[in-house]
Each structure stands twice: as C-alpha cells, then as structure tokens.
Image 1 (cartoon, rainbow, N blue to C red):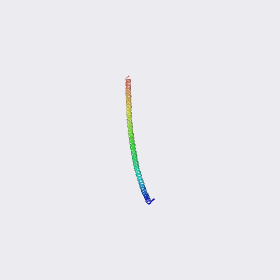
Image 2: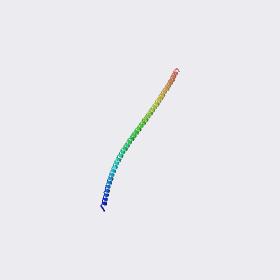
Image 3: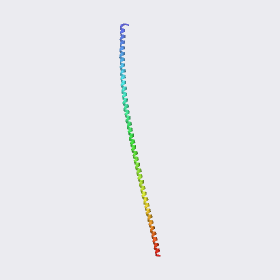
Image 4: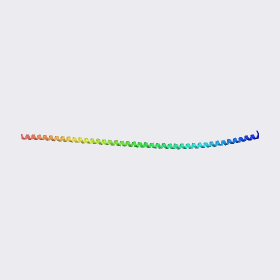
Length: 147
C-alpha cells in the first residue's frame, strides 16, 4: 500500500468515525428529545385525565346531589299530599260525624217530641175519661138523689 492510499483509507475512516459520531449524537439527541416529548405528553395526558376525572366526578356529585334534592323534594311533596289527604279525610270524617250527630240529635228530638205528644195525648185522654166518668158519676148521683 502506498502512502497515498493509506492516507485516503485513514481519512475515510476518520470521516466514517465522524459521521458515526455525528449520527450517534443525532440519534441520542432525537432519542432524548423523543423521550422528553413522550414524557411531556404522558404527563400532559395524565394531567388531562386527572382534570377530566375530577370534572366527571364533580358532575357525578352534582348529579347525585341534584337527584337527591329531587328525591327529597318529591318525598316532601308526597308527604305534603299525604298530609293534605289525611287532613281532608279527617275533615270529611269530622263532617260525617257532625252530620250523623246532628241526625241523631234531630231523631232524638223528634222521638222525644213524639213521646211528649203521646204523653200529652194520653193525659188528655185520661182527663177526658176522668171528666166523662166524673160526669157519669155525677149524673148517677143526681139521679140517685132525685129518685
């Protein structure tokens, strides 16, 4: 090998080594940059997921609170309706009791009035009979005296 050929070969070897080093350096930089981007994206993705999870959890909590509130309102409304129905029914029962008491009182008064009328009628009949009998006795006495 002559000196010139040897030098070209060494020069090529140096160029190859420089190219390999440069290329290795670029690969390393790209790998590092790629890893850095991946890490940033992974962190960013994790942060977005966490935010979304928190937002979704917050929405679920709000929906649960809203639903619980609606259930409570419905229970209160239903309880109020039940109470109103109970009051209405109690009022109807009271009205029916008062009406029935009134009918009973009217019936008692009517019956008492009939009893009083019958007693008065009976007393009147007795009085009439007594008068008639007394009149007969008086007539008989008078007749007996005139005989």
